[in-house]
Length: 324
Image (cartoon, rainbow, N blue to C red; front, top):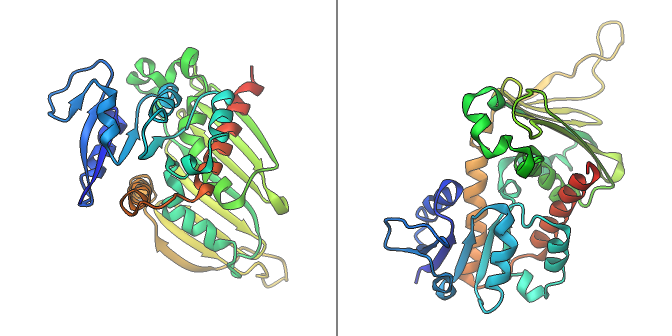
């Protein structure tokens, strides 16, 4: 029997998730909820109790409503919850979720989908790769020029009164959480946001610097105010992994010398295709598949998923507060 799914939201990302659900023959969307809107779909409802008969409910509504809907569902709903990131929007809400019983946490999944992508596998595998050695740093650069497009000024992303830190909350959070999930709780985080385009009132550029155990560091640079770049570099004590222009190259070993005996760039020992532009969609499908497998098999979700989600959420909120 197919798992019955309900979803809160119906446009934009919610629409994308509905399309992904329809790719799986083990589930079906039976209810699409919005509190006030109407929509020409027989599954559409304005009655939230219609979701209670579903095996799982997907929360794909605005960020500031996530806690409200989780709290509403927990009043009597016994099924699974798939909630988009970030989980909630205040430290008090994070603390409330952290105090839930483990049996409830094991049925709530926050969609930090990069945990299920090729980047996750690449970074995880590089930890024990002798060709790379001990990881010293990981650098992410993901930028484009959206702030200079006409539609930027009319988008929610440019509104600093409501979404001052949107670039941190919607872009940087992906790679921050990915590294938290792989490397554990960070020791220190520095946040440097700015507005480079002078358009709108929200930050359009930010840089995160994070220190993890054993001295490894991570740098995450995101911007809506530069040319397009989507690159990753993993620097180790014995080699380098670069993802650039849809290629992944490995250069090793460290002890490479020129004719005079000086250190020189290590040779390339691998050069393969790596489609960075596909990473988001690929990881999103994998993330939903992971969640759905627990719904259909009625098994608890690993608590590490829940705990790391709240740790990343709390980290982001504390960075907001530092600038106030």
